Amino acid sequence: MSREKIKILFYKYFNDLTTPEENQELARLLQDKDKAEEIKSLMYEAWETFHPENALFTLDESERILKQVLDSDSLLDEDPRPLKTTSFNWRTLAASVALLVTMGGLWYTFNDQSQSSNSTESFAVTLEQDIYPGSNKAFLTLSDGRDIILDHANPGLLTTDGNTKIIKEEGDRLSYEATPGGHTNQSGFNTLRTPRGGQYHVILPDGTKVWLNAASSITYPVHFTGDLRAVKIEGEVFFEVARKTEGTTKIPFIVKAGNISVEVLGTQFNINAYQDENQVKTTLFEGSVKVSTPGSSSLLKPGHEARVKATSTDIQVSKANVDQAIAWKNGYFQFQEASLEEIMRQLSKWYDVDVNFEGKPLEKRFSGEIPRNATLLQVLEILEISQVKMKVDGKEITIKT
Image (cartoon, rainbow, N blue to C red; front, side, top):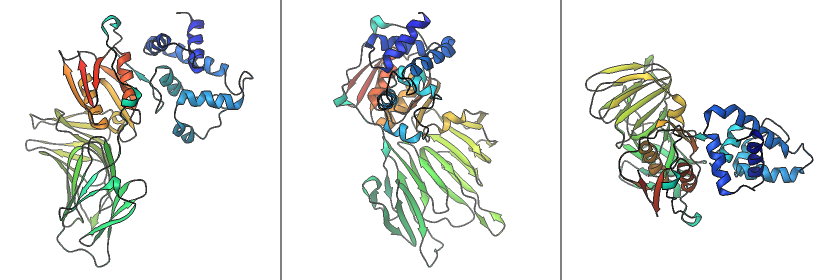
């Protein structure tokens, strides 16, 4: 395809003039890594053709076009730069043209470029059937067995548990505050659970900040006592552990996930311990942690991860992709040479859908990023571009391999 034709395709897309076939053609172009720099240059040329500095369009018209490309008011709010700037985000443009529907403005590309359009079946999803992404919602179980649905509760004091106030803050965050009079030597336990399609943020009684991904839980004391702080988790959880001392003695913080124990003094780390994964992965961002199993232990350095397979107590330590490990907390799905099964497990939890596979495991591997605020329909459109065949019935997705 000639350079001029590619530029025209971009120009037509930004003006909402492309056909579905041309959209598919643009998406395939963006998957060609060998042409990445050339495509980037052509996209800028096409964008600048109708930029606000160009007399072809008024400022209002250009704002409308830019909003069409981004398709997200929140993105415009987050970027304080004036519209007249020419330093427009390449990844945002690429995502838009690649039919990622740009809910977060990220470039998604597939490693596998094979085409099988003759046998591809389109999925049958309409906008009326679309499924929206997860949100901040969770259930809190108190030490006396009472349950509180946090997404239905108003901000402010929720209840007291022993001598501790439990508060829902603005922005959907749970926190704990000691009441006058101090604590006894005994403490009850609370459990915070997120359903499929949910996530939540809690500040534990010691000041440790915790983020729960979908279908996850953490059990912790209403106030920490003794010479250690211990919590238990399931699913995926990110920690910013507060340092705590008793005199000159540092009080360690211990996270238990199945038969794995992670001990820290003050650090940031992520644990992925979903039961439907074949391993538990601990990724360290700052500080140091000791990962232990009944059979071994290992000290992690920042930027490294420890993996323990479900059928083993051996600990495998390697350099980590820290951006990928923390992507969920920052609002993205990030995949690196991931199987379709891995991808669908994440989508199942976030969109609260069931996924079935028919046929042999697909050998394709996928790499890239997808914003977690995209709807399920938008995500499935991405997979369709890569010739993934599927059938959607309500909240059940069947992948045909």
